[in-house]
Length: 111
Image 1 (tube, rainbow, N blue to C red):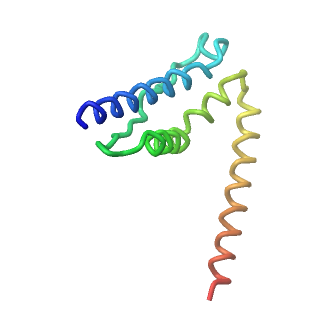
Image 2: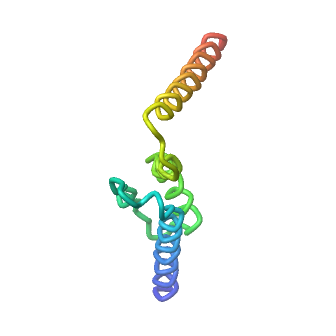
């Protein structure tokens, strides 16, 4: 039983390392030249003793999405001048405000 537990925890560690290695593979090489490096080491999760690997990977993916690393990499894929950045930020703000209004309306309509 101890050997199986050790194997499962090693399997979890290996799968998480593979997932991290694959996330580094999505960094475009052109985006890395002459740019400020992006810190990809800030996402951590702790895996419990009896926790299934699938749930640990799911939690890791959720944390990566919440940290915003993938969106930052997507924006750094091509050069974006200040005008394009302003336009993108305005569109994001409009979408965010619209969602806030919709949620507020939804909460007010609840009885």
